[in-house]
Length: 353
Ligand code: ADP
Image (cartoon, rainbow, N blue to C red):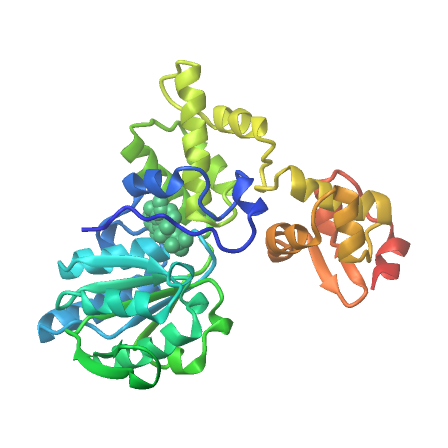
């Protein structure tokens, strides 16, 4: 069965402090567990991926051999760990969970590999962050189910080949482009997880509310989905904050207005933008008439590190069409002006490009 998992927060530490962060915060790796579906049918959305995976697993079951290795790629919080656990559960095999940054030496990986049971799933999160030596060891393990164990040190050292049982490696990555091609080539099944549309997030929120014993009134799930940035982890987190609101106010259920009020308290608006996102848009629109404005200037205006603005705010703002990155700097799009209740001046817009 799945073991509790200490997640290494990888990219931006500031990110982990935000309610709308797609990384886990606080004790979430533990509280996430109760909301994880355990079977493929319980996994919401991603219909094509689910159909492919269903076929892939059914075939492995019929062949009575462990399936090929699986690569799950996509932004944080979209269900990669959940899918890995579902695969193990559906195949009724144990799962071992680790991550690229947790493996510091090739020896760490060798000892995990040499203790795997036949058919076991080995899940390596952030697999693009494995140290080089471990990566090379993994190539042989994945392809030949063998690991060369080094005995002794210096000139007298020798390597003893150790045969491994057939296992299924599941690698997860938020940066597929950083995976070396020999590693990528060793996965027989690659799935790309994408952000979830609102309708799927609504279903997800309804399912999670059921698990948490929280009743949702009409449109409450819709209001939550709008604010969840296409990300199940964020949807579940916001749902828990709405549950706090319901408990504290002694309400029989959460209505849409409760969702609005509870999340307004956390300064999360109806597009899922928080205080920092709004500060960035305000700086570009109000202080620079829509831009272009350089990243460092922008970061200084909102009192944040450039990296935080670039890795934490911008991807969502760009994806949702609030701003674009141009060689001259960041430019606010009409949607950003509208969101701030303003209208762009035609001259300003033309000047920006
Ligand atoms: P990742 O590994 O991609 O960062 P996780 O698998 O840890 O994401 O998912 C984060 C949270 O979102 C978990 O609590 C999980 O239960 C939930 N979740 C993610 N995707 C789905 C889904 N498709 N259906 C139901 N819950 C999901």
